[in-house]
Image 1: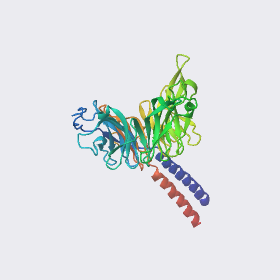
Image 2 (image 1 turned 90 degrees about the vertical axis):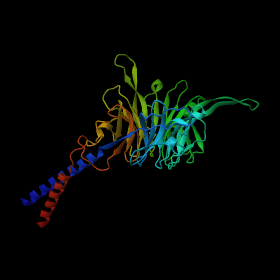
Image 3 (image 1 turned 45 degrees about the vertical axis):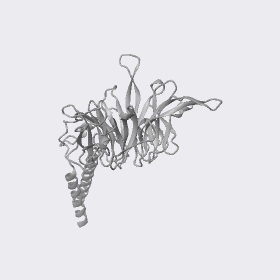
Length: 443
């Protein structure tokens, strides 16, 4: 009898321990975050010799657009008169005005600038409107150490992302459609916006052109744009894909040949449209594509945006759905990290998609965080390798502020998102198992 009792006790203890350990795994699989309000610029210094935009105004708003693995973020902050790019401190989250870095106080030349991407060296890329050049939009890259601004070697365009090698993507004006007559004279042509990628010195810029479905039909009036670039140099974005339509398709470029591959869309024909917004180092892309939803009172359709994630090999798009069951709700994927986690916006709420589940990020803030319930997360724009997230939300007073969500590296007592820590019960189970083993050996 004692031998049988010991065997049953051992099995029971093992089952209990295994169950509890699985509980730990499941608990850790649901991310928990602490939120930091990045605030806004505190003042706007007067600019000598230029219109006094923003003088005496505190920054009324801020938008967070990208984050690196150190926790530095970039975006822009401004008021009704102007907005300018920032980079935040990885520890204090204090905002540094990139326009003022390396420039004598009050002598900046741009009142409108945005930081759109930041790499792990702290280099920021974006675009700025140059007042002394008629408001022309120009892309820029910073050196990462002093935040000194360096312009890219073309006149007009915007830079949207930068990888760890310093390669940049975005859009630039390109002269297309020129003709050569029988005498060798060049005439005609027009300016079209095209996606580009640069080398790591930002001195050699490659025009990525447009999707082959348009090129092969001889159309020279199509546009494209690069939205993100991974560490292999692959770019994703959008390009017009057919004649007679302004609709776009998401693409992924080859890192070596720069050839564009059409990622397609959920629908075909006149309802076919998609856009790539983020790409990870595996070549997975996220963005959005229209889905057709039958109209409730007619024979027509509603076109709703749904976030997607693409397969790195087949490029097949998977619909990530939305945060609620409303068939007319929408979602957009804005960024994806190397874990395959996607962030974006759905139903005016910031979301995280992880391992097949879409979470409202407002529900993943630690229950003990002082800002839980006092800061609303509206849109998530960037996610780093650790799962830290940058985006834009609203304070208790309704002000629009950039935020950073820091993923907790260890479990904490989250009153709304975690189950009670099962470790004591698991240890008890293991102890009982050990007791059974000892008794068996004594026999």
